[in-house]
Length: 515
Image (tube, rainbow, N blue to C red; front, side, top):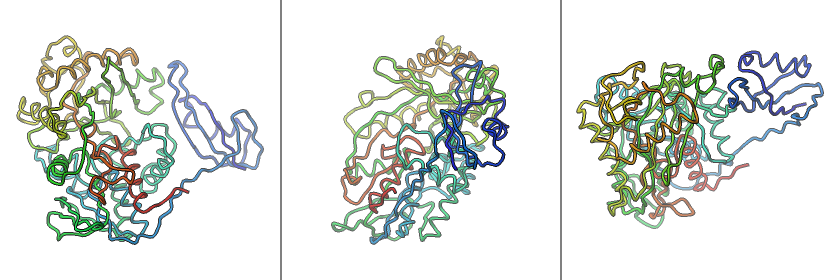
């Protein structure tokens, strides 16, 4: 008999002997078990608990208030036979990846166009920029196989509630992620694992008849009759399709500008965020979250927010034991982001502190004004240093409207170095004021956050797209047969939500269902 055990609590000190504790608790001799869910209850730092939801398979009768009969809720998809021209998918980030995987299983033999390199060559391009400041404009932290998420913490958390999320997590596991993403309450993959996962997904798509064109850039598309779209890709003959899926990513600004200015696809402005990335010693954050139990627990994660009048301030893309990356895809610009490997074992933890940017902050009458606003401050940050060094300050001086003279106890992980400056020279005043408020308010929620020596590194400007490409109930743009999806189109905000959007577009086209 299979039983489900809810709210099974143990001390972090005893986590390594979970199986023995189960055996003793229920007086079992022969049994198998599976972790369904695992979370940490750190509300009382003197008595932190790990809380499990378990499946136990045993011949012995198990009783208790938290015991029920286990019911396996499998998520399966239908894969209808494809009877159209081969679909074309632009971009192989999470949205393009899962759209391509689903359509390949339908027999559609998708054609994938990716302006960047395959993951192995892309890693070399990224390393060349991080070490030698030589930027490949089409293959970098933002562009290439796996999308921007391939060089991140690989967080799979989302506020969305959808049965397809379970399917997506399982696909990541099947293609090389560790099993813990299936049950951790805050699952993450890590950059080191993401590289092999996206490659394995690509290999399955190829095995099913898909075709990849790396280092090829989408130019434009036009309708040649009511059903056929002719797609122009640099370096290829024109390709005809019935379905063009655009999983562009939030940094494909040149393509988004072309879609609006030349192809006249309808878009609207949307809110986004700007701010800085902050670095603390990992052990400081671990202790702030877990107290003395931090020695027995993984590197600590936090998610903090504060609403100041009509503007939100929040932490974003928190990377425990991670690195701050130079993440621009444009020459002479500064863009920061965070990354962690699966073990999250580096000496610092980092996160963005972001402040809401509204269309009213940047609107000059053009749908693309948010993009121009981002570009303005990214270039300004570069001009102040002229050498890819990032503008920075320390918490103490920043809060006192002063500029630090040198680093103290916290050593930065930013690869190109930092220079200390008044950050209001490269960020709007309302963003600076919001960050100051955020630091003070976050410290009330997580004591120790306001650490004098912690570093603020600018600028973080690409948490989401500043435009939304409009689509109808069929998920089509204003040009029928063209399907915008994922982060660049304004419909997602992370790996899981982008993958979810991509697979929903693919299922809509193929008319697939969840079983």
